[in-house]
Length: 226
Image: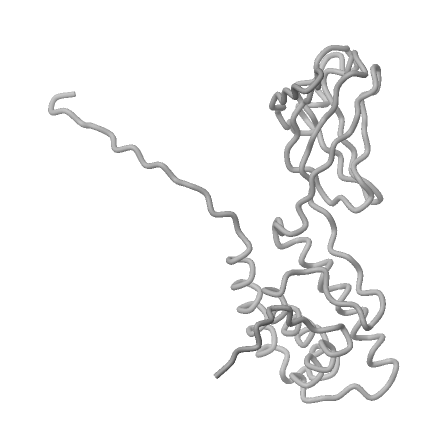
């Protein structure tokens, strides 16, 4: 028997909403039902922002530094900045130097935040409308950059014909999560069961959405009388 030969299955939001309503024992009947589902989907994706780092939303950004400028703004979709390196480019040679992330208290207690030199530390200020990167020391040259990884926000639903800004692995969790959110409003008697299914689906997806790295275990030697 032949297989399909394709691996591009996805669900547009209108079909995903139908599946979620079905799990609540309901069906989509009005425009209000669709609007309610879209609002709940956006709330669901916002809640996922509190569930740790989603690898598919980690992005790389390079920003040119300006002498005398301490604070730089991350891209508008940034939720947080993970790590930064100070980058110098000379001809075809690029040299990255690791920088240390410090807390608000550590940054506040720096005696002279605007002293100039080679930046070696940074403090991230997460505001409502943007994310700011505060460097220490303040760059003293324009011939340098910072390169960093940041976590982007999950995109809004938008049109009902769109698909989710998430990998295929999260489709079951998306349907289950929307069913749970809708169930609290239209099928409260099913709410607990829908929540259990959602948490189980999401946990499986989050477990799979992780980095695999090498681990080296070195045995420790013990000597009698040591």
